[in-house]
Length: 458
Ligand SMILES: *Cc1c(COP(=O)(O)O)cnc(C)c1O
Image 1 (tube, rainbow, N blue to C red):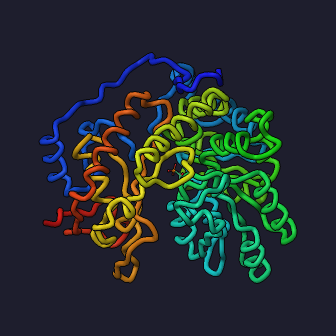
Image 2 (image 1 turned 90 degrees about the horizontal axis):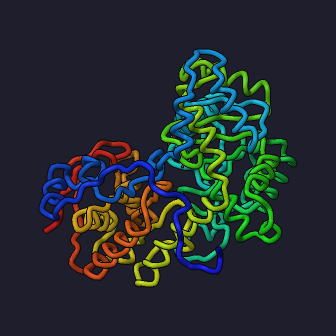
C-alpha cells in the first residue's frame, strides 16, 4: 500500500446526501441576510461545510445497523452494556458515566471539583472546558509548551504540557489544584498532539503532589496515531494498545463522542475514584438522566460503541491524518500561510499574515472566512479577534492570532471536494489585496462570534 501516494478513502459511498450548488449572487444575498456572520447562514446554502468536525461526520453502515438494535429501556438497557464494554476495551476505568456531549461531562466534573480559589491546569483548555471551570469560580490555567503558542514553530508534539511550569504551579499551590488536565489532541492549540513521554512526565509530577490526572480525550485516536508515527518506539504498536497505555497513565477523562466517538451526539465522564464517581452520578441524575443512559438514547449508545471500534482502525486513521495534511500541504506549497505542522482535524489559515493591510480590529479572519464563502460556498470559522477580542469589561483588543479554521468532518468529503477547497483558497489568497475589513454593527456581551452582525468597510 505505502508504495502509492494517492490517498484512497477506506470506504465507498452507500448513501448520499445532496449538497446544493449556489451562485455568487445567491451567496452574496445570503451573507447580507446573515449580517456577514457565517453562523447565521442556512446550512443548505453552504457547499462544503468546514465549520466544525464535531458531530458532523458520516456514520458507517454498521453504526446505522446498530441504531436499529438500540434498546430504549430506562434502566439497565442492553445498549448501555454494549457501550460500557466498548469504552472499557480502550479505557478500562472503574466508573463510566454517559453524558449527552462533552461539555455535560465537564459541567458535572467541575461542579464537584471546582469552586472559588481552585486552579485547574491544562495544556490548553478548550473553550467549553474553560467556561465550565470559570463558571464555578475556579481559575483555568493554560500551560502548553512555548512552541505550542507560535504558529510557525515546527515541533512533533506541539500540544505538550510545559512540565516545568506545571511543577512550579504545584510547588506553590498544590492544595488549590483538585485535578490536572491534558487535552489530546490540543484542539485550541491547532489540533496538535501530546507525546506519551509528556503524558508520563505529567503523571510523575501529579504523583509527587498526589493530584489526580485527567484527560480531555476528544481526539484520542488521532493523538494515538501521531504517537505511532512520530514517537520513537511506537511504530509497531497497534493504536488500541497505545490508547490503553495512555489510559494506564491517567485517573479519569472527559469525552465528546462527537469527535473520536464517530457519532453525531454523545460523551462520557470516567474515573477510578469511587467517591468522586458517586458525587458525579448524583449530579448526572439531576441534570442528564439515569446512570445507564446519561443524556442519550439507547440507539446513540450503540452508535458510539461501533464508532469506538472503527476510529482506532489503522486504515481509517492513516486516511484521516493524511487527508487533513493533504489540504494543509497543498496550501503551504501554494504559499498560503497556515499553522504548521498540520494538526489532526483541521487546517488553520493565518489570516493576519495573508491580509497585512487589514488591521486586527477590522477582523482579517472574518474577511477571509466571508470571502471563502462568497467565492466558493466554503464555510470555515474565524478564530481570532472576533472570537476572543471582546473582554468582560467591554474593552476590545486584538487576539493573539487571527486564524480561519477549516475543520474536516470525518469520512464526509472526498478528495475532489478537498481539491475544490484548495482551488478556492488559492484563488482568494491570490486576490488577498482586494479584500476589505469589517466592522461590527450589533453584538452581544459574551461569545459574540455566534450572533454578531457585521458590515463590510468601504
Ligand atoms: C468539542 C470539545 C469539547 C466539548 O464537547 P461537546 O461535545 O462539544 O460538548 C471539549 N473539549 C474538546 C477538546 C473538544 O474538542
